[in-house]
Amino acid sequence: MKSISVKLGLLSFLLGLNTQMVIIQGKSNFSHSLWQSLCKFALMKKMMWSVLAMISLFACRDQDQVDVKSPVIESVTIDGASVTSAIRQAGQTVLLDVHVSDNTALNQIQINLHPSEDGHVHEGDGHQGGEPRLNNRYWAKSEVLNISGTSHHQQWELQIPDSVAGNWHILLSVLDDIGLVSKTYCVLLTVENSNLPQISANTNPVYDATNTIFLSSGNSLEIDGLASDVDGLSKLFVRMANYAGVSSDTLDIPISGDGHTMAFGTASFNTTGNGNYRIIVEAQDSLGFKAMWDAKVVVQ
Ligand SMILES: [Zn+2]
Image 1 (spheres, protein in one colour):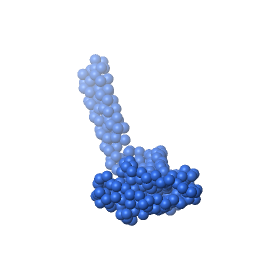
Image 2 (cartoon, rainbow, N blue to C red; image 1 turned 90 degrees about the horizontal axis):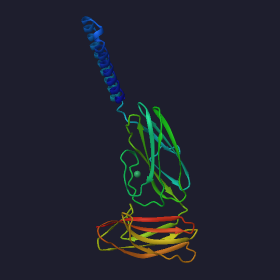
Image 3 (cartoon, rainbow, N blue to C red; image 1 turned 90 degrees about the vertical axis):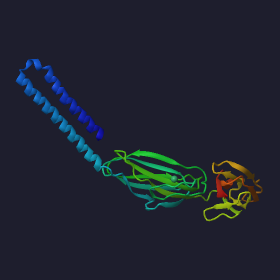
Image 4 (cartoon, rainbow, N blue to C red; image 1 turned 180 degrees about the vertical axis):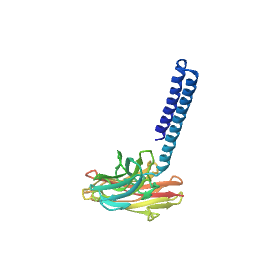
């Protein structure tokens, strides 16, 4: 709006100038008094255009000042329920309905579904984040759609892959036609998956309610447990990794018998200095489904 008004102002200024130039070019054809009155007319016309230009500028500035309201995410529902978190099974379809509004005009709506496993948090409305545990397999979706009007319902059918499990954030935001962005809205989607191998583990020192183990520098971490799968396990290993995902030490456990249930440990991992690490148990079944159990290890 502002650029249009500036163009209008420039255009009117140029029009006024042109009128004066036309008069000057025609000077020789007119008497002195006529020239003077024409000059006054030209000046008045230029002033009139300038006043009009100023009015258009101020009128548009007023409109800019009115539209300082960002678009709003009015409601978010998952399968008809207004929630900030939901638990679903792998393979299910989730119906996401988002109602958005703006005082002038909506422009775009964005969905960003991403793993929440690194413990990151979101400012804005809805779920805040902070899930520390690793997901099983990767799943993500990002889409920007053009929308219009002052009120809009957007629906997405999210098909959860049958191989994943863990926590995902569904992050939503809206843009209006002058570029104002809404507060984000986050929904936590927790996916359970009974097709994946089951893993249980005990550690020494023990892990707390947030799956965090505090370990004194120089001491070793011990772990043992069970992995099972009705289709039979094909791979099982335990590893210690840093927070960049690089493993320092991996213990491969050979699969024996039908591989329905395998015990592991007691395995011992030595720390390599202060910092944050992860102890990870990974199991894969004969159909290729993978599962992970993990805990954060804080060495201090
Ligand atoms: Zn997130």
